[in-house]
Amino acid sequence: MTNSSGKAAIVSNKKVFSIYGKFVQKSLFDAGFSPVVFLIGDGERYKDFRTLQSALNFLAENNITRTDAIIALGGGVVGDLAGFAASVYLRGLPLLQIPTTLLAMIDSSVGGKTAVNSAFGKNLIGTFYQPSGVLIDVDTLRTLPQREITAGFCEAVKQGAISGEPLLLQTESFLEKYPLRSFRARHADNIFQGEIVRFVAAQVSFKAEIVRDDERESAENTGARSRKILNFGHTLAHALEKTTNYRYLRHGEAVGYGIRFAAELSKNIGLLESKDVNLLNDVVHRAGKLPPIDHLDPELVFEALKYDKKIVDDSLQWILLKGIGKPVIVPHGEIPLSAILASFNSVIRS
Ligand SMILES: NC(=O)c1ccc[n+]([C@@H]2O[C@H](COP(=O)([O-])OP(=O)(O)OC[C@H]3O[C@@H](n4cnc5c(N)ncnc54)[C@H](O)[C@@H]3O)[C@@H](O)[C@H]2O)c1
Ligand SMILES: [Zn+2]
Image (cartoon, rainbow, N blue to C red; front, top):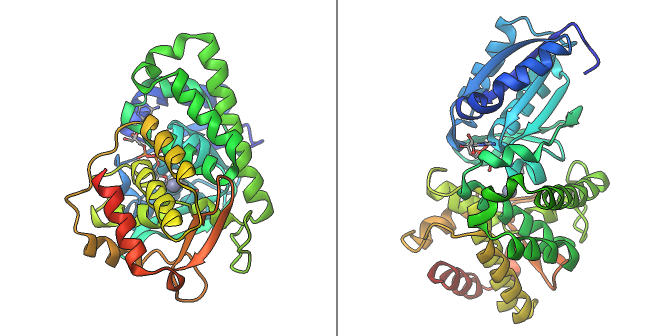
């Protein structure tokens, strides 16, 4: 990103660009870049091959070269797609992530995973490609809808659950102090600003630490600090998203259910104490209301699970907990189906 006379291709969506686009364009312009803009549709369903192809065509049509840069301005959908495009166009160009959702700030913009979804499942096609930089401005959370804040906090609960009590309790006390309904109104408050910056920084540093030691999620690494543990809550989450065609639940909301399910399952097979399950349920609850899922057919959800094989061989693996901050990877075959069904039923009904 040292080029001060090149082009910068901003990838965003209409909604985010209408709020922050002018500002980003002007900053780039002032820094000597000539910005060009590619807008994608708003929603998970646009994180697909067709959008990727349009993005790549756009880069080629605009003669973007390897000394130019791609700027991802938006949430995780924009970031994952723009990151993928940056990694394959001309075999890779500099990428700057500017995450504008809480989820993208604390999770998706950090760590270098890029992806598009395919008919066979979520994030099945992707690359590892580290951005040249991640620019986080928590002020952008001011315009974020409450549902998206909930989704972001659910990923924060996930990171707390696998990191340990300090990070989880930081999330809990933050939400206790700043209940969701007052969240947006508090943005002008300096104390709030300082606390949200510290909150985001703690989350980012946890994720970065895990990624640093297992950047490519090595198949052999199944330890308690392997990158795989970041998928805590995600096996069920991905199945719920797939079953509902990526339209009903926000990704983070699905993770909220996934966390509660994984905690319940961990308890049902004798790994986790009830008090820890209650703590996780409580923090997810504080993160906000999740859309009901009791209308979903469990058989369809379980059918969708098999596409989420976070694996090397052919078996599904569950990331479970034997305590807060103590993740374990358990092969699907070692878990009785009755425990899975009981956990699922308990989560969808409450
Ligand atoms: N790469 C990774 O490591 C990783 C990690 C976690 C999640 N993800 C991916 O991230 C995606 C979810 O990201 P997300 O939750 O950010 O969803 P998103 O990108 O769909 O953004 C959520 C909504 O908020 C809007 N928005 C974004 N910023 C805004 C702002 N500041 N003000 C107002 N509206 C704003 C968007 O237009 C969208 O409607 C999923 O595809 C998920 O798979 C990737
Ligand atoms: Zn996630």
